[in-house]
Amino acid sequence: MGGSSRAKRRPWYADGLRFECSRCGDCCRGEPGFVWVTRTERQAVAAYLNMEQKEFDGAYVRTVAFGKSLKELPDGDCIFWDSEQGCRIYPVRPRQCRTFPFWQTYLASPRDWARAAERCTGVNKGRLYTFEEIEAQRKDAGGL
Image (cartoon, rainbow, N blue to C red; front, side, top):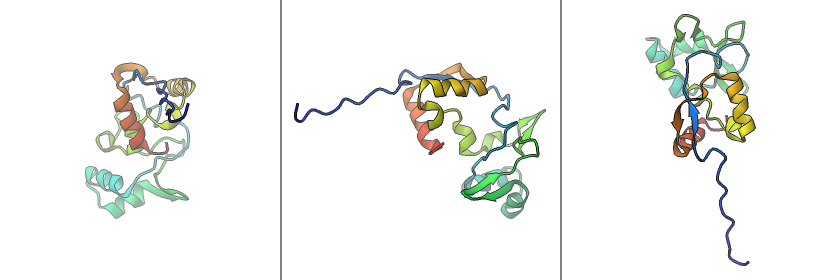
């Protein structure tokens, strides 16, 4: 069969996936981790909070082996999570937060997507994201 090219396999989510953020905060609370932030994202959040960049970085950012991450509270909650208000920086939240749950780690298989649904009440609910929208989010999320 010389010259035949292998047909491109359709991703399992080619027909789209449902997601709607319920603003429950389950992805923001409870377990320690990293919320990676770029310089541009830090500048946007600092401006949103009417702070100087240096002041913002000192108060809310930590330097770790692979870059800059938002600080956490002692219980593992994001420093910007508020039980009354929710995310205090939602309009300018970092890319990592904006692209959840459309991360490669959750899009790898239906089983991985089910894991996302276990930690997030908005997975499999709400509006249907098209394959193209999902791919744009996945690419924007980078290696997550």
